[in-house]
Length: 166
Image (tube, rainbow, N blue to C red; front, side):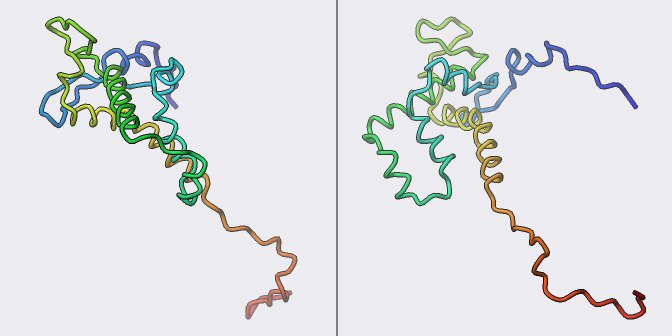
């Protein structure tokens, strides 16, 4: 049996440091790295928009009216603004090459405005796939399992099959 070896630290870092070449819907290709949504959340870089997303994940299957009673919706324009901010933050975190900067881009850098909105939405969808996988895992855990009877009230005793001896 071959010995299993511990994965080297450099191999653990490769996705974050080297990323993956991804062709975006616009036809442009970028090198994207994984986005740690929990880090963005802890750093305070994710607007409160993520809360309803998480709430929907947690309360899926509940009556929608019941969920809405617990969480009042924001004004549409504010929610749209927060969505755009979240998508832009995720893109800034995901783009390794070209790097997205806030102003005065060098030859190997771009502004967020240089990235087509469709491309930003695509990068966002890639970035939250991990959260979606966790969502399906959590929902799968909630499924009811049929209870097993304890056998005390099973009725009459089983009868032997023909040819069996007691």
